[in-house]
Length: 239
Image (cartoon, rainbow, N blue to C red):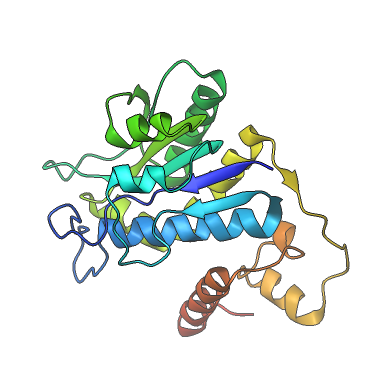
């Protein structure tokens, strides 16, 4: 069985947990990295036959990078979700950092950068050589076959910061699907059946996607669906 090890970036350390841009925003990079990584973990576990680990089971867990990478050795992929920052708040974009030389890693990183940038509607800053980054060095030292550090958007930019929070589920599912594709994960068997009345209503109102209605839902996904439902109800958008 394939193994994926998520290392959500930052968290717990106020010096490295830089705040998001935007009026009234309470998110921080470390919190958002944890929330997105947990969604990715739950999505993969619910849909695919795979073993998934996380270096931060709780949001306030904060192992060092060396400690985190030593938790689970010889995994197929170490994936560290981050968002970027710049003193120039107009800068936007997504980039992937890898240890070069592995064709599968490169292909996965290229698709992650391309599709994530499309979702954000910003610049694809490409795939870069990250062999000197601690996450990648320690991951490889502990036998990881592949390692990627994802810088998804710039939380120092108000537009990217809004997308990181408002489209957290879409970002998580998009990146999880690309990981599953390149790791060739086997889909769990799901019994096909017709939409019932409640499910059809949820699909018609854009709360649940039609192509995913027969997949098991995680608690995090349910919470975001409820959040979206309340927003649509307040705006009078429900049918």
